[in-house]
View 1 (cartoon, rainbow, N blue to C red):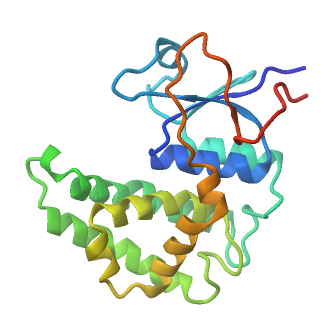
View 2: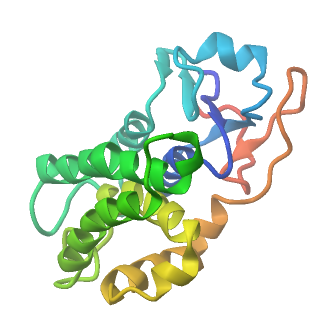
Length: 223
């Protein structure tokens, strides 16, 4: 009998959100430990090489990147075919995710947190980030999802960051002519899947009773 994997997470972090989405979709069970980013628990700091969430502790080692955690979960079970797009393939999906995690995320941070960057011009960063959103809006036209008629790992890896961008100035975002993108995001935000990975957890401390994820999980130690 193996020890239940431990997921160090932070509810609002888009990286952690996408990890939880994949874990929930795959049917895996983890012990969830909610981390306070301004006061990180020592056990978490001793586990995560980068001291960032999400971080998944397995019998075999530690996964410290959200995309790695998504792939770990989906390679164990992929009942919704997130790894099998209608159009394109794995390489194309990973390329789009890399564009999100790279240039788009850079501009998003400099837009959302412009006061942290002395050289950042908020409107300029928003405009630069928007080029990626225009690309997504165009890609969403044929089937309603990024790679065809059903959701894939690319959709759920990118949606939390589009949500973060939108919430930086929702009236401005809602005023843009990105109907496909807005419908995609609104459907995600209203979905049971999204709501199921966003309950409020109390911050974890060593010695606390275990909290399992997904929330309705009763199995303590999967075989």
